[in-house]
Image (cartoon, rainbow, N blue to C red; front, side):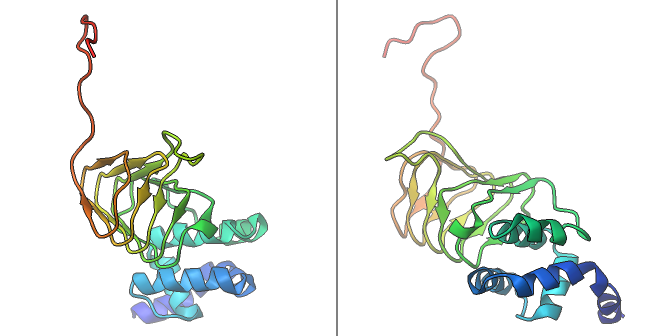
Amino acid sequence: MGKILNYLLIWRSLPCLIVYRLLSLETRSLIQADMKRYGSKAGLLALHEILLHNGIFRRQFFVRVLGESKFKYRLCRWCYKPLFGLEISSIANRIGGGLQIIHGYSTIIYCYSMGENCTVYQNVTLGRGKSVNGINAPIIGNNVTIYAGAIIIGGVHIGDNAKIAAGAVVVKDVPPNSTAVGQQARIITKAGEKNDE
């Protein structure tokens, strides 16, 4: 019964499917890599099913399309509303294929670049901060996993295969194949006292 319903609702995805066929090979390959990370097969019917049932993937799809053409993006939004609570910067051409966002609510992904096959959990913030060598947003390597509630700000580099623990606050570079844990905050003054440092 579910398959029949999917076929009947294909009209909802029709603008997205047409736009997908009109995208460049590079953008389509990024979308296919994203689909694979979500356990979906390649093909137009598989794309329709994941667009219909997965709002997080749909948001990624819209951002990938927006990175290529605002007109094509508007066509895609004709039948599907974007998922709110998940913000991905419009520099989608700097985000490698295979991005998987798990429970992506209250998540902000604004980075200078992100490698392939990265995983981001809920309530994560990747954003602007202190500039390093003229770059004020994180540079994320390949195969990086960022767990729930982590914050990465500024022009820091996160190396390949790194893991950022839940609740970690990262303001310094993280080397490849390592795990970052903990928070960087510390009290420098108390109310009514002068800082002696």
